[in-house]
Image 1 (tube, rainbow, N blue to C red):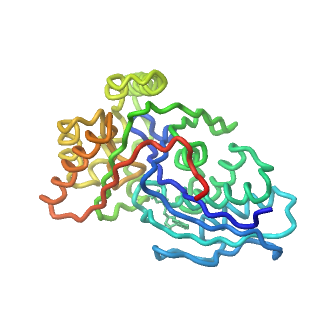
Image 2 (cartoon, helix red, strand yellow):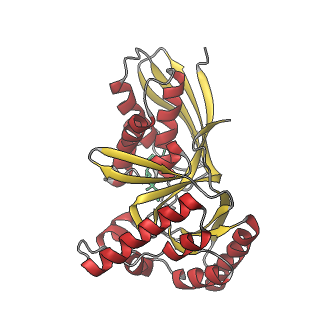
Image 3 (cartoon, helix red, strand yellow):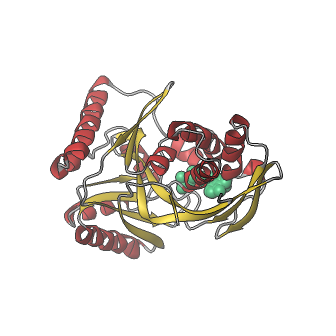
Length: 307
Ligand code: ADP
């Protein structure tokens, strides 16, 4: 029996335009790596953390907290050691914490011969998200665990709906190296919306989900609109409107804020379009003089995987 596995934990885009707090997608070309070992000593220990300056104490690291949630629900007598090789920058808006919390629980479940369902794993990983942001949200952890697009239809009870991804759909993500405090990006949101805004938003959510199911790229593009959160949050991201309009000119189907920012994502059909979109996004930040990272990625339909 294997007592150790090495895994790839994908970055994820949450808050996909009209799907604020409910729609997310897993990426393929950017993610962390982890090595998880089953040991006889009880509890969880983070034995290595390379690539980012993050706490290694079990209770302060999302991988530790999510792992402890799984251990508490399991009859396993021993514990686990975790090595984390971070490639996703914390606070970038592409699910850095979700990659670690889902990676820990996915690997532990494999090493225990899969006693838990994917929905159980989402619940354990959400405890890591609670540590990272104060809110146990599932819109990054669900796509990391299920792969592809996911809709969190309901939290109580938790109901995660996997959504197929058209085969030529690519994401382009640009991460401008600026700090947007999560507390700021939350505090500026309005908590009330009008009926007219609601009608537009749920029309687009339905359109986006239908477009993904039927591989209707035009419908996906028409539906990637957010009338509620983006107009407010985009104020915190310099260059957002130029990035968006240039991405659309370069062929993107749609463009929006990834997670709570500052990363900006666009979807496009085919890798060539996605590369052109990347180029157009880079130009904007070159002109403003802000450093950036860019990722072009196919949608990752598998989610976390062994490597
Ligand atoms: P993102 O904006 O990429 O989604 P997150 O919201 O995932 O960023 O959260 C990053 C926060 O989680 C930081 O405050 C960081 O200190 C904390 N954190 C704790 N453990 C980890 C970990 N293993 N990986 C990433 N972030 C972690």
